[in-house]
Image 1 (spheres, helix red, strand yellow):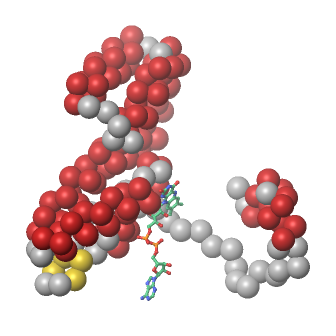
Image 2 (cartoon, helix red, strand yellow; image 1 turned 90 degrees about the vertical axis):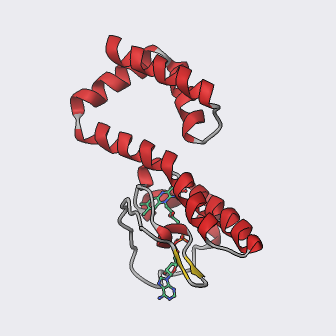
Length: 156
Ligand SMILES: Cc1cc2nc3c(=O)[nH]c(=O)nc-3n(C[C@H](O)[C@H](O)[C@H](O)COP(=O)(O)OP(=O)(O)OC[C@H]3O[C@@H](n4cnc5c(N)ncnc54)[C@H](O)[C@@H]3O)c2cc1C
């Protein structure tokens, strides 16, 4: 979507800005998955995209950054940053897995078709996957969802 199309969807905002001219060229950003071995040294700590990011397809970049900020605050309270490093790794695990899975589906059309057929046959499964993706699921729920996904995948 380009800006001139986006404006039409937000007429009120477009009206407020009708006399404003662009101050620079429109820019986009590349998205990459990046993992760093260490995210702190001495009394410096990285958070957000600077500390490594997940592919934008996960929609998790901001959520992850906020969770990292909370973990960093706890570590600062404890007076040591090693626990932040551990928490950071743990927080990145789920979005990284989902990101890898989605990029795999992007690369393999036959897998993608099978996955979409499976989800179309069991729409509740999609809701369950979203809940798992957002970290709103217990280990038991995840195990049951994985089994259901596996079955749909095989039978699609
Ligand atoms: C195409 C795309 C789609 C995305 N979609 C989503 C989504 O749907 N949901 C979601 O949650 N996340 C999404 N993300 C990820 C999200 O945008 C990032 O995770 C988030 O912006 C990270 O915030 P940040 O503050 O860590 O870094 P940034 O937002 O990159 O902020 C860093 C800031 O530092 C400034 N800066 C850099 N170097 C210097 C310097 N030397 N001196 C001073 N300033 C400097 C930069 O100009 C920038 O303003 C998407 C990302 C991309 C690229």
